[in-house]
Length: 163
Image (cartoon, rainbow, N blue to C red):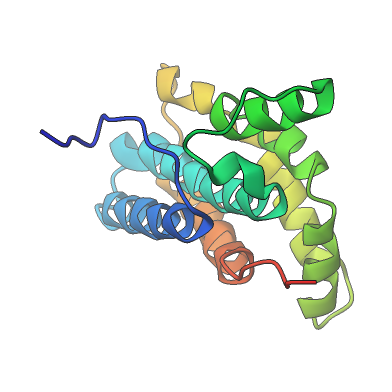
């Protein structure tokens, strides 16, 4: 029987679909307007960004997509494999994707680097460990966070240009 718990290797397109679904889940929690659900909004919003960044990793390093790929042979390949399949550190993942900054600079019509700063802020603050936090954040903060995720998602869901 197939299950949502089965480990699968996603394609970039599937990773973007998952990002859309987690965003929809975060919106449902946001719409409750209850602080008790704010942590879930933050957590799911960060997962959206994680899925989108990993879609870029999968595009940039196409060998990650093969089911029967040999174990990475070089230390740099091992690092990339680990980022894609083991890590949730958005800052480190983003560090392997400098081309994203170029895209955001071009689309930021104000020339203020606002989108780049927004992405850096989310990647610097979000952590998967939010799922274990005993604190309760406010829905006001969660709504701002999700608004930023939504704006970034529109640009990050676009595939890398082919060269």
